[in-house]
Length: 265
Image (cartoon, rainbow, N blue to C red; front, side, top):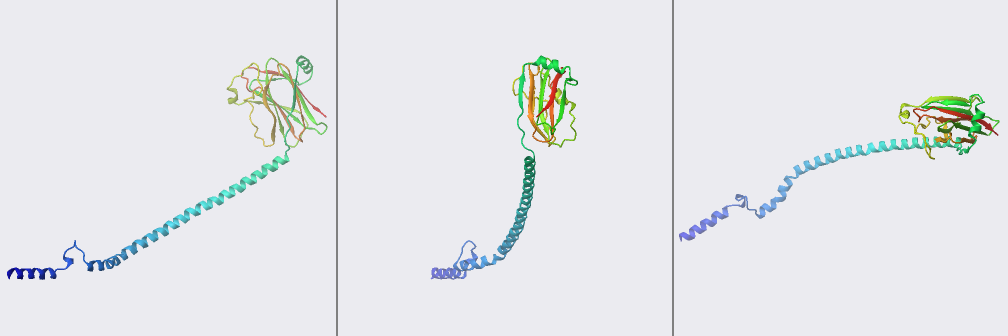
């Protein structure tokens, strides 16, 4: 009887206990309350969502700002393209205004002594181009002629020669001579005397900054001490020829130059 009483007493105690007294054990009631507990945490989740939405909004604004900036840059780029296209149009217009220049006709002659003897009797036809100097002969076009011609020779050593054309309208018909000194950079290289190969471009000749200046013949070292160097060029229009005799590559030797320039119909 005592065992039965103890058993019934134990059962009554167990029945009085709830599952909430044991945190590690869940009951059906606990499962039913689980959604309520989740709902109770919805407020915190809502706050988190609102914070996230604000963050997204701010990030969206930043994104829009970033997208707008390239759009402005793109519009600037279009403007630059328009400007570049405008400059291209201007350059194309300038090209259409100035016709292309034909290559000159050149020749050599063995009558070296005869030319020198003849030019010695003419005034200003024999000059000395000093070491490091460039002598430029300005020859304007004239309506009575159709082409310009030249012949030249030197004593002992070669000399550089090139032709340019200035499209600036002619204001004087006088043929003038200008002497210019080469820069210190051009004087650094010593002259190398000897046979000159074709394509030996003068390092002393520089590109012209004048936009109206066009190149007909780049400055090359010519064997003017071995044969007469001659040539001609048809007038491309109104302007001035620049015949350059270049001795800028020489550090030690002056060059005696025999030359003449004349017009032909």
